[in-house]
Length: 570
Image 1: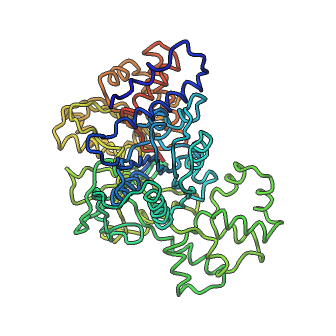
Image 2: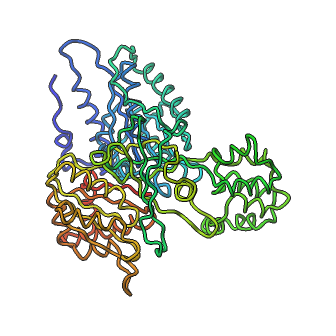
Image 3: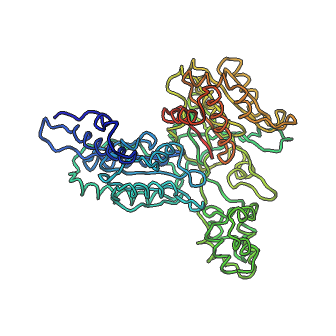
């Protein structure tokens, strides 16, 4: 069979079509061209192909995509897993069956490897998709207003473009395993029925599952619990080392470790005392080990507003301003809200179903397996405000000493790691505890004897009290592992200086590293730092290229597509 030439050559430049019509035709013709690739030499029917597309921030969606590929193969379906940003609208239009698995990042935003896909998909020039059958699985947290928003947006847009829904979207909460497994089984069975797959295909081996997860965490010995910041610092940053023992856990620099915390016994006791309940028994155990009692759930807030319409909480909610509510809730826990509701507050039996499950907290690993194969290091800021504190950070800092046992499990992050090519330069931007993965990256490169240049931007408030790992970083620089080290201590001078300040100051050199093929990494606070750093990066590119903001945005988009600009933000 003679294949059709590239789609662009089939639409004359002077054809009387709008941009949207041209895009639709391009996608339509691309689909015909893709069909022409079927093997006709043997007369065998082509194997149906399923494209699994994933959007991920921490790796969970990518893991589920791999399981979908394995399940499709077991049913005789050809399948591949691809990051959403690697798929253009024209390529999407050439697909017949698509399964999308995506998380949601920040305030209802697309995860980092799906933003370019979404931007193109919502464009007026996106092609029509009448030939596409699809299904969407969302991963999220009902504690956020924009629960699974990325999945909802993609699901709706595919339908708007004419694609046919293969199966209804499922939005998974933090306990995603069971609903995700049910959705996967249902979707694959429907696919097999629609395509006539016989189930005789050779399934690729799924990624091996670790026996350690949030339900069965590995009981690791906490070998080191050490204060990194000065006792005079306004912050408390600690260094932890977890012994992997006989767990069989293997990790990569850039992965995360999930810590399964226990609630503060003092808060549990105060809550039970307020409820007039016993501190022994199953309810006390649930409050200590399985329920979130620090941050009130939406369900509890709604219940308390209904029960106590004259309470302070009800008054704030009645204003309808989410920012006001967030401000009022800051520093208040479940016990505070029960006290505010007075005698109308629920009893223990009514309260328990309104509390969210206590979740593991994930922290970027700050070590390399080449340097520390038997241990995982974490760099954690203890969150404290008044008599309150972060559940996991104060659990580690205050309620576990050295040699205590802590439940942990690995959270791989395949999209955030050291370049496989040891000659490639790296630029790392990680203020505060954002330095964590980059300490691991530098140890990894030192152990590999990598020749690629390494540049770190690091900062905090005061050099004297907040320069964590100063001796290590100085040593790495003296050994030539750390080529450039730019520091930004914001409160050491009258005018505040941040890492983005240093980026702008070294605009020419930074752009030169990018032109030399450097991979650029950002780790830390998503709400402000990561956005400020990206704005600074766009400014650097625009200044050095001199071609305007649109060109700078496209340059950065190309870095994303090439996996040369990646972020680990939270």
